[in-house]
Length: 375
View (cartoon, rainbow, N blue to C red):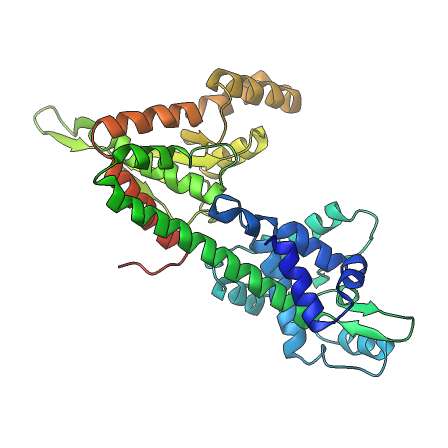
């Protein structure tokens, strides 16, 4: 069943015979239909949580304060909520982080990102979905998105229905991620008899249309074991040289606000950032955030490495027009690892016998990322 069909069923349950009318009239429902498309595509599709959760916590606050209760008239309902002092920013963000997959969410969705995306979807609507008072750090959901006029005098409030829709989306995504982990765990058993099946499965996770979080998890798992047996010799003087294997560490959850560092390598101190864009501004911003320290980019693309560098340089030159500035940034790109290189390194790791370890790492990191139980 398409998730849109689930949305229709939820609306039909709450408002029999009015589901299509409500979808046609409600921009907020239309927005959620667009944002929950990934629910139909399993764990491999990017889940949309931050912007949806911004809506969720504000509508939840709206309901908790009693504004979703039946009113005598539409005018009175608007007047009551328009006098509300607004929800506190800290309480909203705290609540977002309590929701599944929300532990590492930042403030972007509340502050601008959700509103900007909404306006991109509905440019002619001229409506601000999340009004805010930045000085007092108070936020509201635009009540016009929750109240639907049926026949000129009678209105309905869909606030509780919106919460049900988002709850169902969370439930569906949790089930999807859980099933992904179960598939991986079943392959652990199968892998003892058929490593080729495991290899094909892992390779299927290294594609341009892969979910960004899974791509980061799989990239880390592959690179961790690719570098695992590489040894360097170092010391503070010639008479005290020590041998040490390279170790790759994941710095935190995906999409975390960690200054542009996804992985870090010991003892070389190499930084790695996983991305899916070829927007040079994103690359240069990451470089600036770590004071122009050299960084390796792992990019979810099949574009040739030379072509990637050429695109980045060309776009940067058009923006900065000063070659010296562009060159300073380009020198900070220590290495680019695209999908073909990642697949090559996966093959080398498999040849070294690390396929079972890579699969185990994918399972572990997925459980951490998706808040699943870890034995």
